[in-house]
Length: 183
Image (cartoon, rainbow, N blue to C red):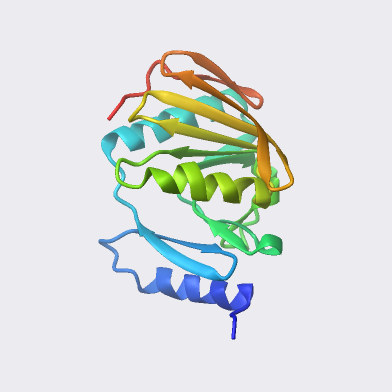
């Protein structure tokens, strides 16, 4: 018997609740599967997320950029915890423990050293299905930033790759990547 999304969501919450405080896990749901990933971001990873957040919020004060926060679209049975997401502050619902993916305008992921496939394959497949209009993929291993946009039929129709050091238009933002460190 297959569990419903609501049952998986409760299980994800239970797993997160029993995680020791000195360990940090992301609990995510993809259709009938629930999985965890251990978070062990490097300083480089954290610096890029911080610099992205500052640029997004300074250019659009009506928006918030949240890190490591649950984002879900129960209609497609997906729960993700992106490195960074941007959405209008008015779309936040303090009574919910997850952001509604349909209100998110941008998701950014910084590719990890140890599991790049998660960002390049798994999340690239999940985000357009969840209704995310723009997916920003920052790869400190290669010194590149890729902007995926125009989601149609469960995939992004457009992608453009740039090198660190360039100013990159991402949705309504222009991101200065000159301060992004590499691994």
